[in-house]
Image (cartoon, rainbow, N blue to C red; front, side, top):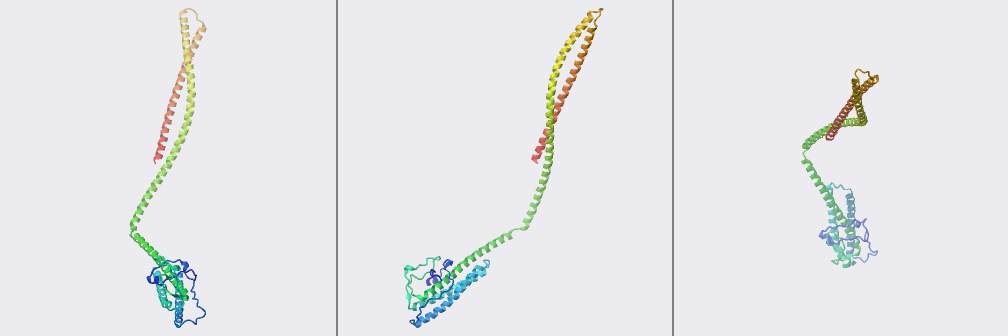
Length: 354
């Protein structure tokens, strides 16, 4: 038992006020009071008081052992067991009552003692509420024998320890009751749920989910086919664009050739006109020289000129036909390219929508 442990007054026990103490004030064992070596001066009353104190010490020792057992059991107690807590609280209340009886039995001994000690008011602390500590009496100048102070401190420590155990047990009991109330509310809410309705709703939701998954699979398939067709269309557009580029190159070359042919045509037309003039001149010359002999060279030149004119006219017709064919082919290619472009755009839009 430490010298700094705090004690309680009998008035505190009579009022029944509960205090909250630190666990450091618990005693580790019971220390017997120290008596002087020479007891010859004690009277018969003091000898009876000493015997009574010895009995009280034995009772106090038993109470301290019971408190230690209760404390160990408190560490192992199941919080869910309300009955066990009620029994522990009853046992603690019994120990507190026994300790109060012991303190009350010390009062006549303190009045009959010869060696006393006066405790000043400056060394005392008054109890101000349920959170105050136990001290020796200050308001009342009680005369307590010196050899009884250790016993009184030990008894009060046992009472404090029992009250602390009682407070802890009451708190744990409240916690367990709150847990039980929560469990009852949860069970009532669970019983209020209609599981059949929930099962029907779950089945409907599963059917809806299955339908959505089926629609999603169909959409993925259509999207895959649309992607394939779009890829084919893109490849076709690429090939057509390459062909179109090559056709454009040919068109440029053909335009150059056409320009050259037109120039040649103009030259041929001018040559034809000139040859026709020469032919007319030669014909007039032949007609005017009727009866006269014509030279063979003039006849040959006329025939050659006529052949050249016919050849030039034939070439001109062929070049115009080629030009018209190339223009028609170019218009067909452009129309085909527009159709393919429209198809690719429609395929891309359908894939985006799906």
